[in-house]
Length: 512
Image 1 (cartoon, rainbow, N blue to C red):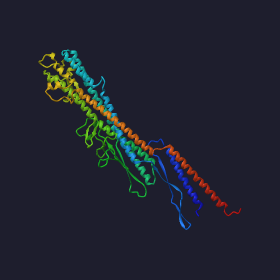
Image 2: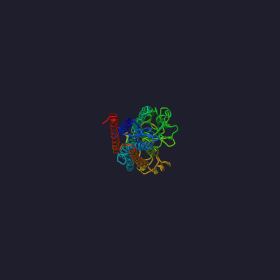
Image 3: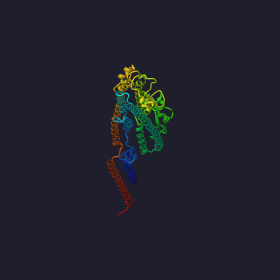
Image 4: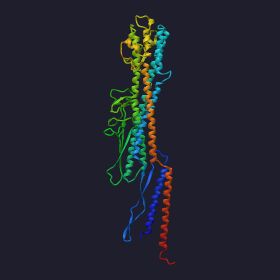
């Protein structure tokens, strides 16, 4: 026969286990609105049974319940998918934001746009061709040219400013990645110490997972968690974070258990300059000099790099950034206009000494959108604007007509110059510029569609993760009732055992 105290011990275990389960339920309820919190589960298990002898054979008698462990309701596959989609969303969100700003730079279609300035410039030459000796009309040509060059300068300055702003963001994002990596490394140390002691630090794991989620917005993240083989009697894990292109060999490890590896960027002044012949000098690298490979359109950092610094291709090579390419297009447009107008105003005109209509502000040989200016001689003396060809009747105004013809195309230019090529690619300067405007519009629409698609995917993955890991107040209230009833029943059992002991102690052996 078992001792009555056996029943008290069994009841004590039940009270302790149910009370702990109630505490865990209360912890879930308290954190139902805490960002990054994962629902915790009290896993109860029966204790080892006793063996008693009865009716000629042994019987196993249960000894009660004990709390086995406290686990998190977490699905690693869903976490991996969520972070993948989160990286994609971060890329397209940052790219859409930058492209919208670039699109506003064009200021199209308005009366204060570069396209409008070019049209007015060609129109001024057309008006001058009708009255080639009119000094007032020549002054209008110079004024329209000054407005056109100012537009080129303004656009270039806006590109430079945007480049500086984005490179500042890149610097902050790299600093943020390094900070998060250090925080994760510190949490790894705390979690491992707890695991070695036999604890299950779920709240610390939640903090670490939340940091990884934040990191995935900036760059692609892959978590590798493996068991530490140094500990065979308990569950102790090694935790590693790989960033960027996860197919790169060797792996691009940001955090490896109790170590983290900082990223570094080139000198900010280097980032703000146009791309050099060695684009790798612009790339983000680890402190050991290994370049960071981003992968395929993942994370805000890659989006900002491709817009302002240099884009990475699928084969690992690098190309001009979006802003550098854009600046090159404006430079080509400025060079094309200057080459065409200067041909008619100087070479074709045939006057001695010839005067270029457009020049550079810094006396360099190459005209760009940043340095194109109207010849200072013409600015101070608009009457010197050339309208005709030397030796011809001034009324023919073939110079003014040739320049005005640029409004519709390059046919007259090719005939006059004997060149089969155009100053720029396209049917006309307006078409070339218009094609660039259409391209940015298409890029903006693509970024918007991709971002909207990623919004849907991230929301879906977030909901899926929340349905599994999130706290349901209805479910927790049910658990409260369940564990409270079990606790009350165990307490009632203690009372019953007390009565039994009272009978044994005070009732047995007394004659009534």
